[in-house]
Image 1: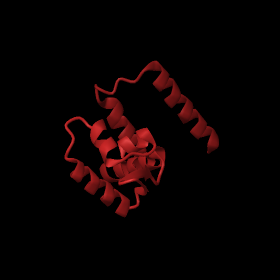
Image 2: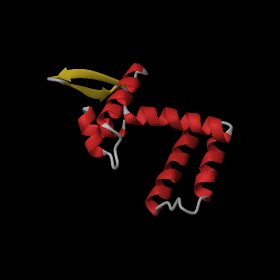
Image 3: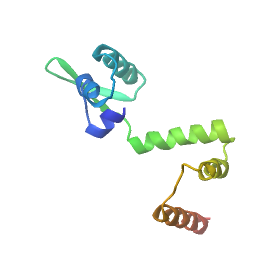
Image 4: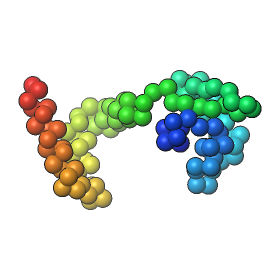
Length: 112
């Protein structure tokens, strides 16, 4: 999916070329077919190759995945998920990122 999102559309050959230590082209084609069956990709035919395109925007999929993670691992508490992230020493936030988080919190409070 990452390769398809990065390129906008991609063939199995394109995906193999973008992956370090890739699986076989046949394996990539199989995975892309499965992703299509699940509704994540669609394809068009170009010569002998299928050219795949994502059916949903990366951000929308990311938001849904984050919601599942928060629900599964943090009992639905975004506060607990964010606290776990901030407590991790490897999550070094820049001043710019902290300012943006502060701004988002303020905007959320105003909206209530």
